[in-house]
Amino acid sequence: MSTLLANDEQATGTAAGEPGHPPAAARASTRRGGGPSLERVTVNLSPRSVAALDSLVELTQETKTDSINKALQVYAYIQKLFHDGGALYVRSQVSSEPERLHIL
Image 1 (cartoon, rainbow, N blue to C red):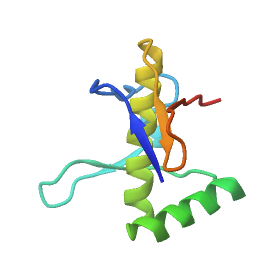
Image 2: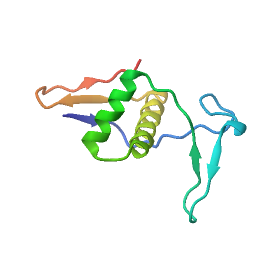
Image 3: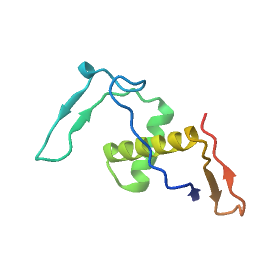
Image 4: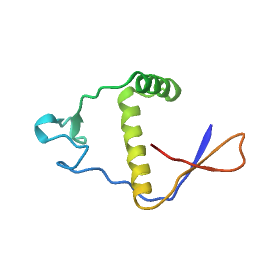
């Protein structure tokens, strides 16, 4: 188990037309029961990513959709933090010193 240490900045998503965001023709949005607009996307996962997703679903008992949604939000937060000059440190239970997290 690791502990994440970071400041409270909010990450922002990308807008249509920005890198990493598909063109409008490639997106299918739906609206159900007055809830938030949902966007259906198709992704190709590497075997390593499939294993990570399966492990996460087993660990959290959440759906794959919920796990992917949360993972994307955390990744966006971390990237925004790094972009703004921040840093993120993790500390395992056995280590007393936090180590700086680097994402390649």
